[in-house]
Length: 369
Ligand SMILES: Nc1nc2c(ncn2[C@@H]2O[C@H](COP(=O)(O)OP(=O)(O)OP(=O)(O)O)[C@@H](O)[C@H]2O)c(=O)[nH]1
Ligand SMILES: [Zn+2]
Image (cartoon, rainbow, N blue to C red):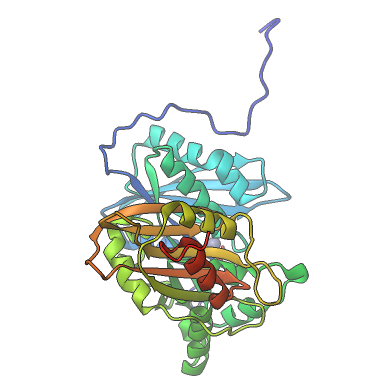
């Protein structure tokens, strides 16, 4: 090796060309499993692995090891058999680690072990699942083999309420509330530890944060897996299902002080597509909208079905943090029944202000400019 420059061993898993053996539409779903410390995430993973025998499932666990080193375990399960591979990641921050290395690590593993049918990703208890979700979402646009199927948040029936009401310094968003805000499905676990009244309280608190989320209850994270896997939460071919759901959403009562909550409204008519993009960007990126107290509205999750002038099909709107997407669904509008429905989950949201802005800026014909 005389005279040769030896490159430092990189912490990054080696780069592997992505050989796509999957046909179109054969992408692999990723379900993100989030939840506060000790809520029952690993218990849920283990339950899925023992119950689900027909799928080859890859599990990504993120646990903090000694010091700042994060050890990342990749395990593959088939018919309940587990084998593991360890990846050392230099970065203590999950979302950054995943952003830089995670997808490559998954693709790398698939190279070596063959394709999986499903990927489960357990985030650490304090992680923001929205940040992890965004990473898969961005990649989906780059034509990845992997797509985000849904975000599942496990909640501790006994301590969940306390975790939700914990005040954060400097106006930071409570992590437990954030995890519920971005979830497609929540599982209130450890129901054996509470009575009916306590269970009703936590259920109500979850609903007050996220008016759209499905709520299951469990002991030892035992839930019907058909309610957890293959949710297709972000799939525009699922537009009819979302449209139905949006009709049932109600504004949530602020349950907790300064909390995250859900607001929803519907407006009949056609929208201007460019104006909608500007409205969403002003809201998500520029944080231009303020509530009556002058605090900027922060949207964590956004969903909607909207109607564009001249388009026969319904369009699905999806947003997580600062990312959003508009996709045409297979659903056709019924003439004269074009009703835009939007649901916003976040902080400092003022429904009336949002709705007024939406009508004056985005609705065709109502435009004052
Ligand atoms: N009583 C009771 N205990 C449970 C239930 N589900 C899980 N546990 C226990 O709660 C503890 C935490 O469960 P985990 O599945 O490790 O929780 P986790 O969310 O993965 O925890 P972290 O990864 O440390 O954040 C374990 O001791 C479980 O056995 C339940 O339904 N009832
Ligand atoms: Zn765990």
